[in-house]
Length: 266
Image (cartoon, rainbow, N blue to C red; front, side, top):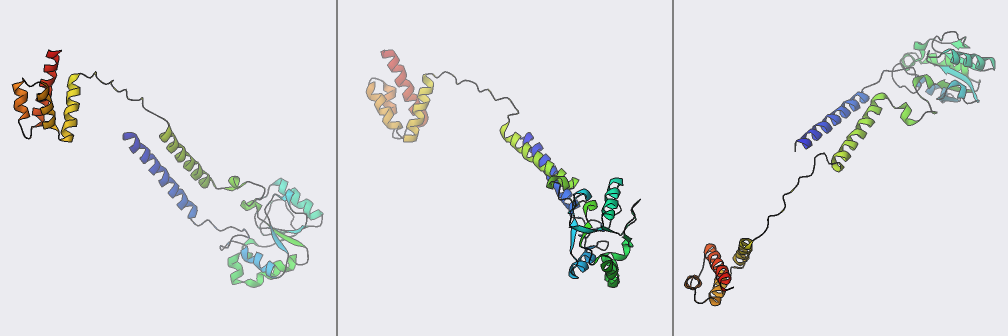
C-alpha cells in the first residue's frame, strides 16, 4: 500500500511538471525580425507586399552553402553571421548576387543596407510607402529569399533536433513515467510470502466437515436416526434421535458417539 502511495505521488509530480512546461511553451515568444513573425518586429508584412507585387519570393531554411542556385537576392534581417557566412555572402555578391541587409553585419559589404526598424510589421503599418524602397531594390533581379536560418528554421535537421529544450524535457519525462509504470507492473520488489503448509487432518476435521454438510442440507435429524439405527442399544443416540429439531451441537454429539461406538466395535 505504501509503495502505491509513493508511486502515485511521483506520477502526480511528473504530471504537474509537464503541465508547467506546457504553460511555459504557450507563453508568447518575443517578436523577431523573421519573415514568419507576425508580431511588431517581424517582417511578415514586407514578405507579403513583395509576394502581392509579383516579386518571386521564398525563404532560405538551409545554411548559405546549401542554398538553391536559383536564388539571386538574399534578404538578411539578422546580424548573426560568422566569418564563414560572410565569406559565402561575399562570394555570392562576386558571382552577381544581390545582398540586402536590414542589420549591420561585421565585415560584410552588402549590396544595399536598410534600417532594420524601418521595415518591420509595425513600421509598415504606420508607413506602408517604405515597402516601395525595398521593392525598387529587388524587383527584376530574380528569385528573392529571406534568410530564416539564423532564426532556427532548418530543413536539413530532424524534427527532434529543432524541438526546444522544454519540449525535449517533457518527452523524456513522459518516457520515464511510462517506464516507471511498466516496471511497477512487471517487477517484484518484495520476496514472496511463504505460506505455512496445511496441518494434518484428523477425525475431528472429518466430523466438522460432515457437520457443516448436514447443516447446509438441514439433515441433522436424519443423520442422528441413521446413527441410532446402527447402534440401537445406545440410549443417548436414541434420545437424540427423538428430537424433532436437533441443534448443531446435538448433531455433533451424535456423530461423536457414533464414531466412538464404531471404534469400540472394531
